[in-house]
Length: 167
Figure 1: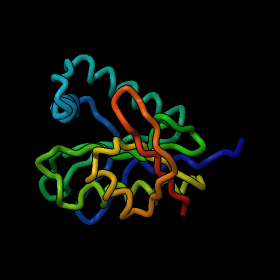
Figure 2 (figure 1 turned 45 degrees about the vertical axis):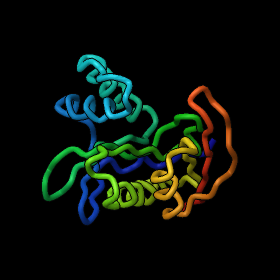
Figure 3 (figure 1 turned 60 degrees about the vertical axis):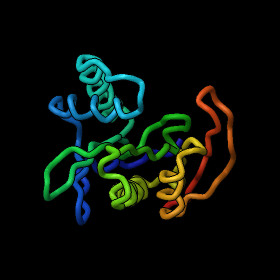
Figure 4 (figure 1 turned 90 degrees about the vertical axis):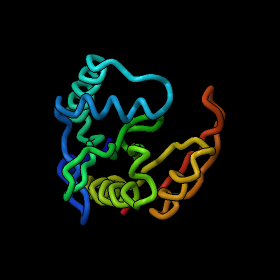
């Protein structure tokens, strides 16, 4: 099995900062997840999730990172690499932003920085899985050069599997 460099955990773009999780992100992370319409996760559960994300980062060398705007300094979501439905060799790119910041190019900007960070690890390919109903996310992936591989059906509905070669 090939070894990979550790992904950089501090990324900066023109408008954004991606950085490691802090316990102080729990409240905003909980608010973001509540936008999925399935209730607000308990703060304790979110703090546990943050600890799990940090632990996974140490063992895998990849990370899901909080995204904040540089000028405003506010937490607007997350973006990064996860194993998800894929593998450590070919991880998934994942992102989720508050609805109030949708349509401003932040997801594309953050994901482009993560793609560059993934390429720096020596990986050759990334995946993404997105509900086929999620047109905005599919547009972001298309802009980043991801191509549809196949569709699967899950309890939550149809899922598009997209892939992109690196660099």
